[in-house]
Length: 368
Image 1 (spheres, one colour):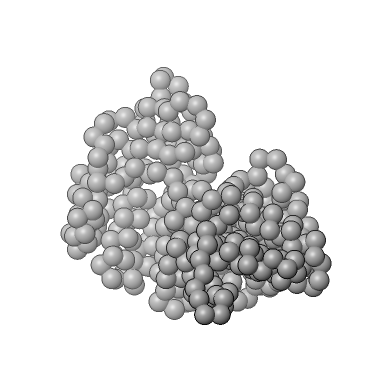
Image 2 (tube, rainbow, N blue to C red):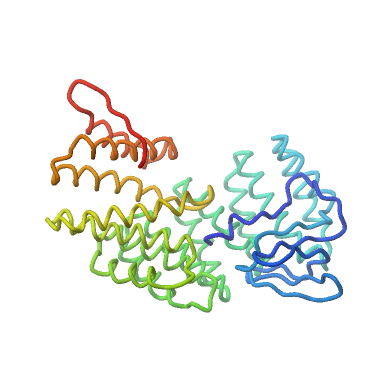
């Protein structure tokens, strides 16, 4: 869920001992009081003698002011990398939470902490089992998608498609918006196996459900599926339509700019000399939005950096300014290698960077 994962949930180490909860809206002053509902679609807070309900996309962050003692102990153990103690404390915390406010607000984060502690303790199967229990016990949790995705990623790292599909099927069996997010996760799994056509079909069915919080994510992943499929005929109008909208989220704009750049780059490879300049502009716009949060897929930003380098290489050959174009291209390759060390993006950038070196010497550059 683009943006949601980056929210400051403020659970770390129990640093807040205040009785009040704090909600930080994206617009307006912060609200101090009691959060009475904290679910995937938003929250409700009683503050200043009034009750206010905010949609998830209206919330910049929040702090829960009454973290249960065992949860606080678990967070402290996690910070100290005592993962065995963290697992024990999280497990105890789950047993101690009684029906009422504690269950509604804290149980979801205790489960998430337990999943992460088990992962850190190198017990992926137990972590995945805890994700399944979480989905059943917290069917409308604020962190429903984030925690489910952690379980899916763990399963994929273990090459266990069956476990990943089990989590996805549980999501898709739930009501919206969990069902829609489950469809996005199914598409992610399809794309991991290079089934871009299947992912396109899955995502197309939900991408226009604009009244649902997963609509933006679905459109972002649909663009990525079309890029993977190299379906520029569909990519071009989709991306142009998004870029023509007012107020589109940054992640969607970045995906659309990068996708449009791909469509134009294909035209340039086919001999359309004007398309190369449009591609450079589109990729530059994608890059200007900046790197995504660390817990979000970097596909659109990283590919824009790679492809703008390829654009400059191509432009240099056509325009007779190979040295200047090489300097710009290598600068972008250096940026990919710097920001995405140890990834496939960096490996590709290094290979193409080496291929650009002049005979008998190294080259370098900075992004322009």
